[in-house]
Image (cartoon, rainbow, N blue to C red; front, top):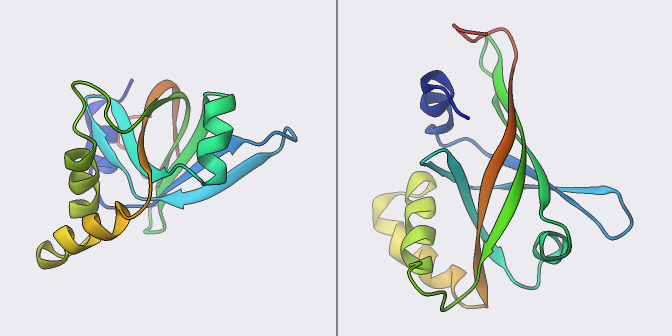
Length: 142
């Protein structure tokens, strides 16, 4: 789903605004750290968060990733969330969280941040894009 220009853009340490569907039908939007890998987006949260409960009930999500440098560029994504729970065979949750954190944190602080994040029950969210739109005028290829 992501062309090479979008992948290069997504590999910058920008915030993703993740939208989930609340029980009342309204979107709930949260800025989160993320990692793009293999055409998927990964983020993490605690199990007691609203976004987790929303995705456990309804896998449909939306996301916006943009920067405010001119010329303006961003990506709008519709996708499906896959929730990776603790102890899932074949999925190293701590390593994935570590890789996400390493994009946004100084190297000397990564381990401490990961330990802090795992003080509570943590999940990793994998977003499978189903529709991607480039937004803004700063793209080489429309």
